[in-house]
Image (cartoon, rainbow, N blue to C red; front, top):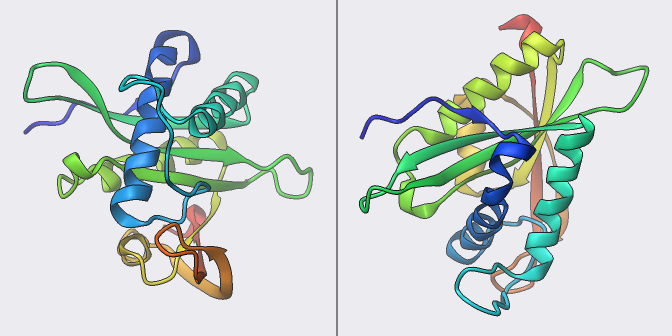
Length: 190
């Protein structure tokens, strides 16, 4: 399947996708036990409405895009039924400091389990880094659960492991404390 180019989320044109962001977020937590802000079970009033907690989180992210402190990158696909749908996304958060205006955070790289193993994560990160460089955001940081599939992806994308914080978060799978690993990439040296 040929993928269309990665698109930057526009709050005016793409607001209708906000529930899709929330559903992918929920799906990644339920499928992989991803340590990603929320714990299941997720409550849905109907099949078209995500859990109110997750939807509110994504509406807040849209507000950050509107104010210019976040950029969200989206990979759209054409589904088997011929409908365009969101397959994955990642966000670039900017630092609001005078001493580090060149720093940015990679946030919520999530790909729908239905569209994995298609190179979407790599495409999203490549576009994020391209835009970051154009904006002068040259030092990127991120974190993910130690031992997770994502922890193996970032080194392949050129990110350097910085360290690990033990017992960092509560696993959505069983509530046990899990470790978090931190990475960085200096785009000035690539």
